[in-house]
Length: 72
Ligand code: SF4
Ligand code: SF4
Image 1 (cartoon, rainbow, N blue to C red):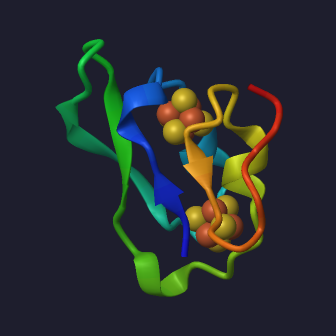
Image 2 (cartoon, rainbow, N blue to C red):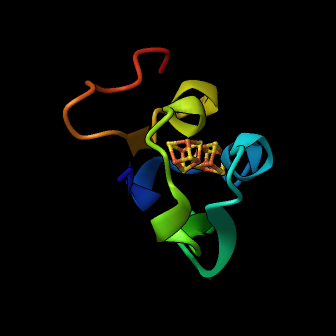
């Protein structure tokens, strides 16, 4: 299962758009910088493919055991 660090999120929505299992949805709470951030709306469907972590430009998503996204 993925972990989302709301602090880094800029609400771009890429992770939601590219998740093949529709696991993520934009939440209704803002982080400290004022950005809405995603939540795992359908966690049981996650296949740990890592796409969400790969597309996140802020490295806000990690997959425990698979290392952190390194493009941020
Ligand atoms: S790891 Fe894959 S299936 Fe799980 S939330 Fe991310 S993109 Fe979706
Ligand atoms: S891809 Fe990253 S920055 Fe964009 S909404 Fe998802 S967690 Fe936030």
